[in-house]
Image (cartoon, rainbow, N blue to C red):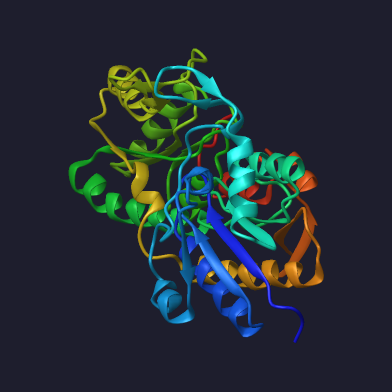
Length: 359
């Protein structure tokens, strides 16, 4: 057995199911090598704190976490450390504090679990502060191009599919058009996959333009065939037919995607008089028990990340391709954004099933 190592692990960005399964796998694999694992709380905020906010992780502590949602370490998706908003309204570069926190803990390496934005920030910190970084991809949007699976996506699809399954019965009972609005910051992977699996009649994603006239024609055609209801699934980032992004703004002036479902409902009701209802899944897609596939991929990623540290192979991210884990430079991994390609297999599948998917 080689020299004992002390490694840190943090989760950054939005939460999702499967993060705890990664943490569990890292602790089990590292403990088997005689290494120490420190869980860093609240992502980089934990390294800013003095003393750094960490928890020593033991196998018996993480064993029950395989199926649990969220992240036991906490996370944040606010506050770029290179331009951190202070309480007095000023902006401060707090990256030196994070770097100092890493070295104060005496870490040999850091495992960062995040999406493309989080991994880009962590890589910048690593380059600036001599941090040995290994990345693990997680995003329910599944839009990191180099990996076929990112942690959290499969669970989100399962939840959206179950919602469609349940909406079928209410839609049929009341002869309604039921609209399900799902997450998808800029990519429609959740809507596309869940729409096919859940038997949607219309799937709308930001990558493919649509026509309200065509949607209404599709609904009317179903009615003429004796099908008295229609299921529509739409990604939150889909624009109105006029090209506008629908957002909701809170009392603090913060905006987020939301409202495209209500827009579609009003349009359909006004045009053809159909009774419509809208369900917005929101953060439900991020929570709950991780799917078996997310647990499997998370476990494989955690073990592979520890093995990279043992090899001294840093500035790399683990990824899933062709039924196995591969490793790629982080810069290469996050450079390839993966939107839905109109020629993708699932797009062709949806069209072949008679689902309206736009023009």
